[in-house]
Length: 310
Ligand code: 9J3
Ligand code: ZN
Image (cartoon, rainbow, N blue to C red; front, side):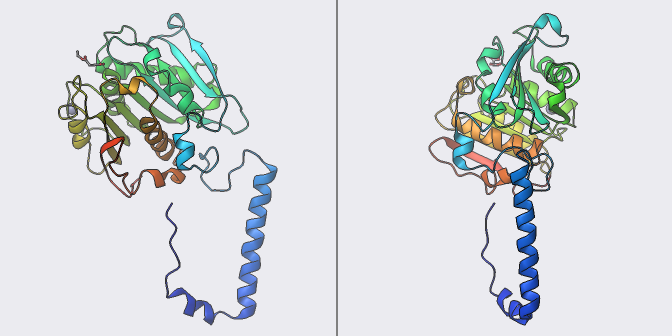
């Protein structure tokens, strides 16, 4: 959040206030601040802000770039034999239950790939305060529309049947995916407008137009992608999303179609910020999204709307 210095017209008005009134206001403010500090100190999980969905300490550039966030994580494997509608997967989640429930994200791999191809995102995102489900698809040849259905089936399993269901706020869900899984991410958002965030990673889809999407979407492309070139995939995906939607386009510099298959700080920091901002309504992360990030060593291009409307 940007801090603004008080503008010049404040001080004459302050001089009009009597000394006793000024002292009463100051004491009241001090008492309220002390009470808030005491409540926060006595209740480790308590948040000083009024947003009930905020989780974890105030973020910084280094905290969103770090290889792990503030939460220790656990993981549990889900067998394909125990579920219907998708191919099983691995759930990564904050170990502690003392901070209440968390938002959740399902993530699909791409064509011919397995959950291992996106596994780095599990602990990376979960340690920031999300339940993360990296899935396998029914077959590795499944197309984007099917991957979208499977992401939704995975979220339904996660919130309805999984061993961590009580740790999740089922009203705060998002989807991500690589390549055809990114194409599936857009399909899932189109099919379920209640989703709070969507992030296709070097997404691939024969459908280039997404005016139906109501979910805040961060489209991530790669400047050197020759499998799903940004000019025919991520860029039209982004452009076709409604202009009224909170949306952004991040083009990675020096990156390929397979950059999202390895740990990547630029993908992580903007994904964490987008998920926090739109799944948790956590405006402490707005500072990393608005004003729009500048192009540089790892960002070839960034587009989006600021300020955000939702
Ligand atoms: O998931 C993907 O990597 C999709 C890219 C692709 O090769 O599609 C061609 C059928
Ligand atoms: Zn379309």
